[in-house]
Length: 325
Image (cartoon, rainbow, N blue to C red):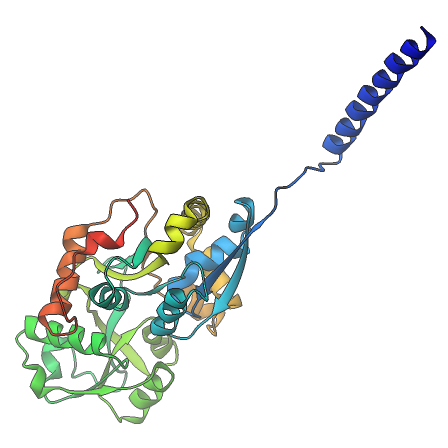
C-alpha cells in the first residue's frame, strides 16, 4: 500500500511541476519554436526588390518560420541564371522579358509568384531630357537626337515601339547603350540629348539638376506594363509548395505595409541600395501585386507578343504557363 501511495504522490508532484513550469514559461513568454526552414532568396540593389527587403527587415519571413538568406546580384540575367542553377531557391525581382526568354527556350521551367506592374499612375520608365535643353517636349521631338538607354535588347525594343506609336521612324533616332552608372554623366556632358531611363535614374537626374522628366513611356507600351516578377522553378515549387506559400504570405504582408506606409517603407531601401534618403522617398517603385490580386493575362500576353513580333523572342509563348495555379 505504501508503495502505491508513493507512486500516486510522485505522479501528482510531476503533474504539479509540469503545470508550474508551463505557467512560468507563459509568464516569461517562452515558447517552443519549430525548426526554421532556410530559404535562399536573391535581390538586386534596386527599387523593384522593395517588397523583398520589407519582408526581411520587418521579420515577416521569420514569422512564417523561414530563415531567409538574401544573396545580392546586379542584373536580371544573373538572378535567373542562379535560380535555374539552384544556387537560390526563390528569386527576388527580375525583368519579365528575361522570364519570357526562359519560357521560350525551356518551357514549363519557371513559376511566377508575384508581379510588379508599372503604368502612367505608377511610372517607372521615363524619357529624360537635359535640364538645359527645353526643345524636347515629347517622344515626337526625338528625331535626329541621340538617346541613351540601358544595355540589352528589351529597352531597344520598347523604345522603338514607343517611337513608332507616335509616328517617329526609329531609324532617325541614334540609340546608344549606356550602363546605368554612366547615364547621368552622359546627359550632363552633352554626349546624349536624352535618356530612356528606368527608375531611380530619372529621380536622381532631377535631384542633381541634370535632367528633367519629359513623359512616362508606359502609355506607349502595353499598359499596365508587367515590369518584373518574383519566381521559383517548377521543380522547387513541386518539392517545397508549403515553403513557397509561406514566402508568398510574408511578401503579401510586405505589400500591405508598403501601401499603408509608403514613406516609411521606402526608407528600407537605404539599407540595400545606394540611394540617398531624398531619392528613396521620391523614387517610383511601381505597383507590386498581392497574390490575391488577379493577373491581367491579356495584358501580359500582349507584352510577350510585342517582344515576339519585334524578334526579341524566338517563339510565341503562353504566359499562363508561367504561373502558380
